[in-house]
Amino acid sequence: MQTHPSADRMYRALIQRDDSFEGIFVVGVKTTGIFCRPSCRARKPKRENVEFFFCTKDALDRGYRPCKVCHPMVPKGEAPDWVKSVLKEASLREDSRMNDQDIRNLDIDPNRLRRWFKQNHKMTFQAYLRSIRLGNAFGHLADGKRVIDTALDNGYQSLSGFSDAFKKLIGTHPTGSSQKNIIHIYQILTPLGPMLAAAVKEGVCLLEFTDRRMLETELKDLCTRFEASFAVSFDFHLKELSLQLGEYFQGKRKRFTVPLATPGSEFQNKVWKILQDIPYGQTRSYKDQASALRSPKAVRAVARANGENRISILVPCHRAIGANGKLVGYGGGIWRKKFLLDLESKNSDRF
Image (cartoon, rainbow, N blue to C red; front, side):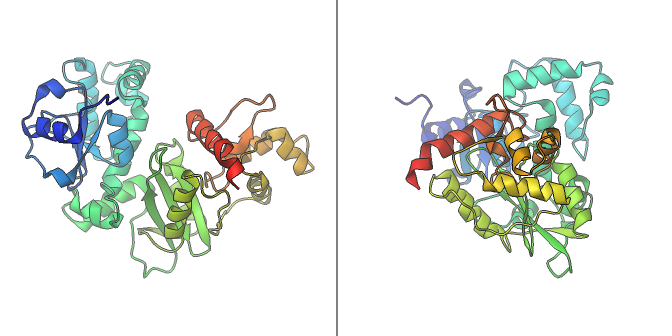
């Protein structure tokens, strides 16, 4: 039974600026990397250049940025003025950063704002800002196109403008592949939302969901550890990673063969190796991991090293659970951890 309007019907509503469809869908415009409400006054795109979403979070997860003409993050007729004031302030900031004190300076309770965003957009306000920062840094990632090309096509007037936005996110300017030390980064779309992948010549060094709180810190740390600059490109090991991830989510792959680069302490690398030894579709407690290290009292240190893993899924920290069997401690969110474990459980008999 169809519960949503057809794509053709939604496109007609968009062309007609039919406000009766407000709250039913938003539309992403591939050529601009922007998403809009149905009644937006902006010039209407061609049918082949749009895709439709039934909540703003899905559009943000896909890599789109909210339109500054129609403000789709503000549900029409529902958003109070105090929310509009915060969104306006965020839109005026080039780096899209606002901490709790910035919000209080507007005479708004940060906890109240957080609850409103969770209720209306299924994400926190800070997760929204992180999505905007990534969107501004990379632009809309059109399938099959280089990120650098889509970034320049989607709102940046010059390469220097993109470079400045990139530096605010990561702490260094993007650079060409002619440089000696390069970390190649690319955004990979998955059923659980976009993931940011990074690789050096030795292997994949990062794979994280783009709304992870510590992502920006991890990127800067990698830049320091490898004494390298970032280049946005679908290169080296990233194409193979994207292919193997696709097979994994389709239930067709249980082991990854793409090489990894995991700078860290000796203890951290031992923990990450034990994580990789946990069989597909199975789980281990932190206590089990500590025992495997022959350090049964190092449970807390093991848990901390799990949390410091930068390569999700391939180094399967989602298979680590609490001693009581409960799902605990996953940077991508417990709901994603459950999805991954359910996926593996469902497909474990296929291998």
